[in-house]
Image 1 (cartoon, one colour):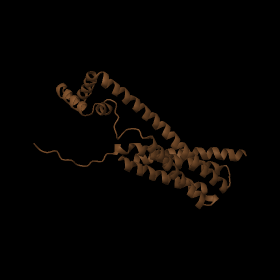
Image 2 (cartoon, helix red, strand yellow; image 1 turned 60 degrees about the vertical axis):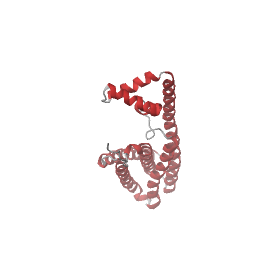
Image 3 (cartoon, rainbow, N blue to C red; image 1 turned 90 degrees about the horizontal axis):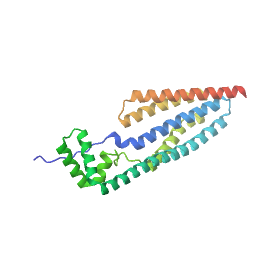
Length: 233
């Protein structure tokens, strides 16, 4: 009999938790801060006022992203824990029914009844709760919710994204501030789309067009609102 060999594999699904939070945070940081800068600048505010508004947006946004992500992912984690507790109780009270359930799952994936039964029996003997968590509930170590990780990833990435438009405010004089912020932010968003797509193993063009379009739309709308308020004052 040929001996089984082991080889290392890496899959993008293992990155989904932190990648989603990081990309969302960086995208929000760039778009919201750049939009705020453009809105305040369009209202004819001073450069100092624009900078203060941008810094406030960075701090408030990072804290909001961290809190929101932690609460959201914690709710998911609580739901997973409740499902696992229920499954553990059912395994203790009705092991045969749970074995039948696992057998039907494997039959639905293409195994014949005899083989599906053998697989279910062996997996439950090895780790009954793990087998049901993975194959019935879709919960595994890779995909399990991680609130702290998601919160830190969101806060750090939002702050990094928000810092980019602020650098433009510091470096560019008021007369060229708005156009420079727009161009730089769109470039930052395009780079973010490329990096996130490459990291996640997706096609970069689609991700890049998506983030640039929606980011540009948000900045255009905010600039228009700021210009209206500036004209009215």
